[in-house]
Image (cartoon, rainbow over all chains, first blue to last red; front, side, top):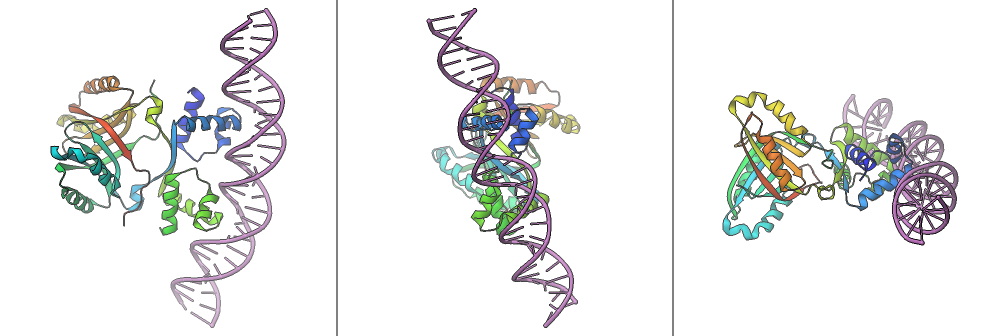
Length: 150
Length: 150
DNA sequence: GCGGCCGCCGAATTTCGTTCGGTTGATCAG
DNA sequence: CTGATCAACCGAACGAAATTCGGCGGCCGC
């Protein structure tokens, strides 16, 4: 995990489709060496995949929310099943199982607030839910360049 | 935005480094056509970028948390500056500005709970903060395949 | 029915990914 | 100090892919 690795990590997080030759040239190394390094990163599991990022606004899903869910204490045993359910909802972007006042935080994206209302009302039907409250997301920033901490 | 586009969207979100020829073959179209379609998706802003995904555990950042922050009412005017500050912290993965009980939710990843404690204590020093509480993330699932809702 | 247009195709060209043998430089045992 | 060992890097060669572009066909408007 030297500086060459971290540089490649930064480049590939910035643009996963950048050519191997291009990156090698910027780093001043041979393309074959560059390829070996990237292979190493994948083999060691540092890079777990390459993904295209879609703009939610461009696919008519401009409204985001965080839905905080607390299960009924008696339903905590089926938390995994509930987790699967929420995770499979097409509206869900990501799902956190957390400690604290809530058990789950669901980050969702829908068309508009109307659709958000429908989703929350739909979720609230579930028997295992003890409390549910939603927060509209005004702004969302996701970091694409994640690095090892010093 | 026909079924060809959605299929390409799905493929590229699943593996952004898949070859054009490969995808064209699977869809039964010419590589040149496939390339045009992908160009269209980029030009229309549907695909906003390609990113490598790094495994947090592999870079010694196994501990995740959601830090809920409420600003003092008098400090809401400087919310943007505060947002910038949190967003630039190397520990931050994503930042939500939300409605509801909290003003911000910061999704962070650090080495261990010790480092989390340090981060929270450090954040709490900020004058604009009225309330701060953190939740440890037991599980986190992010969907890589985001599609238009029906 | 007819002209124009958009999208798709396929071959040709350029660029790229990938392999592999050889070389260098560091490390370590003797 | 010296020699051997190993890992990493290089560069050329080969196969494969990206990209371009001219042309074809279907579709819509008129």
